[in-house]
Image (cartoon, rainbow, N blue to C red; front, side, top):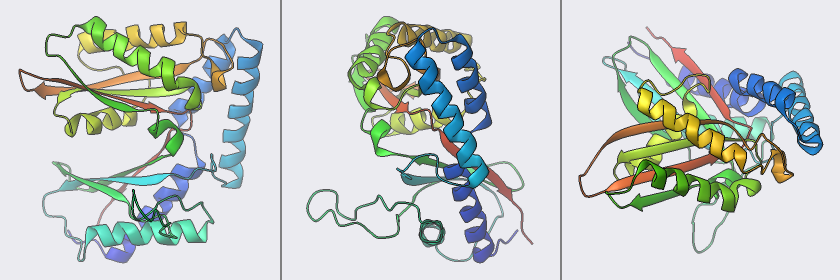
Length: 282
């Protein structure tokens, strides 16, 4: 199956607009539920504004947030799919065209330490290619801003660490940075794998619908425990106090070395910007 590079660019551009302007439906419903259950007057006001903001963004096709972030593309690549050309260049071209045409903010600098000069088009994109057994190419994009990324962390716990140690590590991160991350939060946690891979697991956790628990009952229970304890902190919407500090906690786990216990705590603001499509070919 061959996919024309131009068709792929066009498909990615549509995804970027959808992700930047439309709040994921499961998150939107969770916001409405959080407003119904919120006991703080300030919290209710903030949640009302967030819901209204999401409705306006969807209706007018305007960005949910002024920080239109950096772009992640996940390509779930089946055997036999062929796209002529360089995939990184194709992804970058889609980002350049979209961010210029839609007047989204350019947020990427080309050198992280010295010049820190803006690239002027929000490229490059981060791309991840994953093998797939499906027949069509599935593409997921996620937009993440700096506020919540600055509040995230990778930790290497002792291999003897307990479930309670993991809970305390997450709570410590939320206590220190949760109010700065535009709560209510969606929290993705990676556990296991390796130092570099566990961060990917935490972002993968954010991509899971928030009404889907981990299929492993032990980890599903851990998700519920952490969510309850985060909300007991009463940081609340926008850090102004209240019940809704987090809308959801999702965990992805993987085998790890017997002498390590990596965890990644990925805090995302309420604006979980995500879109997905499937492309065929000829």
